[in-house]
Image (cartoon, rainbow, N blue to C red; front, side, top):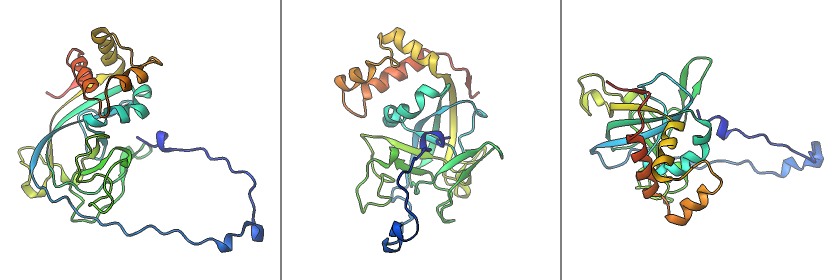
Length: 240
């Protein structure tokens, strides 16, 4: 869940109430209406995405936040140090992406709770630039729903409404994504292998300076090193 990293403790001082607050002079804040539509492209593509986890039922990706490789460095900043596992998923997807929706795990009900989209978009794979940091104003979605997001990468979410069942192909009964395979790695094991192969400790204070001094975002050289380390690290769980 991204609830912990998105939670804030705010302290207010010099609080004024009543007429001293001048609240009557404040204008209400309204957000502009958001255009909900799908991307024009409607191709079938193969995609590998990742996810940090503290432990969850393995082999399921429905309604769970994931990220692509170009997002690895940015997303790792918030999750790598506090997560026990790193998951990879290989999928076949319809690239007619839909708007982003927020899904958060509810431990009390053991379910993910997601913001709702209009019914005609509910089954589409959701996509946005990482942290909504890139995207041209006025372009559908505004924040990288349909753009390359080459620098900051993308977050991708696969809604349960669009999941292809066993034996189905993309498009059958409107399904939009199909999970092909998955693996689960221990974060510490991956980066122990990484350090042994490349002599770099990513948890050291000097790592950020090394990374930004050697290349620029999205740090593809670093991505390739992580991928190489994962190839040499045994998975703790994997699809058959």
